[in-house]
Length: 452
Image 1 (cartoon, one colour):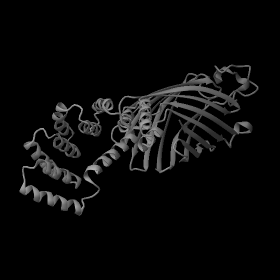
Image 2: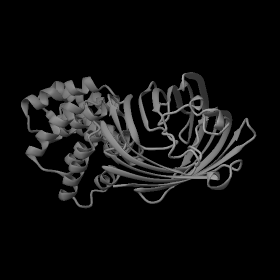
Image 3: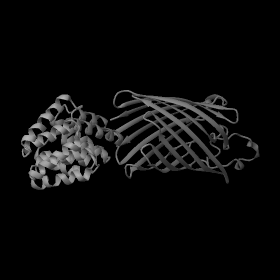
Image 4: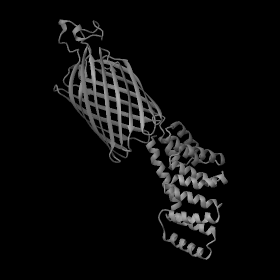
C-alpha cells in the first residue's frame, strides 16, 4: 500500500470525525434549539452546564468560533470543567491551529492523565498535524487503558505513513481480531503489499533479417519484497532469445526511501549472455519537489561480453497535471567504448498516461541511438571467443556482420492496463521502431502483476 493511499484516508478520517461533531448541515431544528438555550441563558447566565450545551449545539451546526467563545466563558466560570477545555481544543483543531489545540488539552491531561476523550482527541490532532511520534505514544497509553480496534487501526495508518508495511499489516490484523467487521482495517490490510510478483513476456520482430534472427522474445520474472516500505528489494530473472542465442540474467534492485520526497535506488544484473550486456548496474535518485512534480537522475553502466562498455546518464521529470493525467519526459546521453573507439549515444522520450478507475492507457514517443552486435556467424563459432574486435579477424572474413552496428531510430508505442480485483493487474502494449537504415522493428509485451 502506498503512502498516497494513507494520505487519502486521513482526510476521510477528518470528515468522519468532524461530521460527528458538526452534523451534516445546519438544520432549522438545531437553530431553533440554540435559540431556546440562548433564551434560557438570559435568565440564568451563571448556568455553566447550559452554556456548555449551547457550545456543543453551536459546534454541531458548524459555528466553531461561536462554540469556542461559549466554551471559554464556561472555563472562566469553572476552570476545572474539563469537557469545556476539550470542546475548545476540538473546535480549535478544526481551524488547523494544532499547537494551540494541544495547549488547550494540556491542563486536562495534567489533571486527568487517563481522560479517554482528551487522549483520543490528542491522537486525532497529532495525526492531522503529522506528529506521528506523539500519536503513537498516546495510542499506546489508550491501549493500556482500554483495548479498542480503532486504536490499532490508527497505529496501522501511522505505520503506513512511516513506510513500515509489516507493522501496518500487524496492527490492522489486531484491529480485526477485536472487531472483525472493521471495514477500514480490512481495506488497509488488503492494500498492504508484502510481495509483488511480475511476469512479463515480450516479442520483437525484425522484418529486415532472415530466418530465426527475424524474431526475438524474452521472459522476465520479478519478485518485489515490501514495495511500499522505506527499504524495498526486488529480485529478477530474464531470459532472452535474440539473434539465435540464449541469454540468461539474474539481478536485484534495492530502493531506499530517505523521506517522503526522496528515493534512492541501485541495481545489479548479470549472467550468461551472448548479445546482451553481461553485466549491468545503475544508481539513481528521484525527488518530489512538489505534490505534482518529480525530478530524477540515473547513471547506467553496461559491460558487454565482447570488448565494450556503455556509460549513460539520464535525467527525467514527471508531472501529474490533474487527477487522471501524468506526463513524463527523459533524456539520456552517454559513451559507448568499443575496440578502442568511443561513440557518443543519446536519446529522449516523452509519454502521457491517462488513468481512471481500474483502467489506464499510455502513449510514448522516443528517439535515440540503437547499438547492436550480432552473435558470431556459425562458421566462426568455436574458432574465436567473444573477446575480439573486427581488426583481429583477418582479411578473409572482412565485411562479416559481426561488428557493432549503430543506427538512429524513432519509436512509437501504446499500452493499456486493467486492474483485475484488488491484487491483480494485466498490462499489454505494442510499439514500432523506425530506423534510419530503412528497417523497422515491431515490439509487443504482456505483463501480469500479482500482489500478496
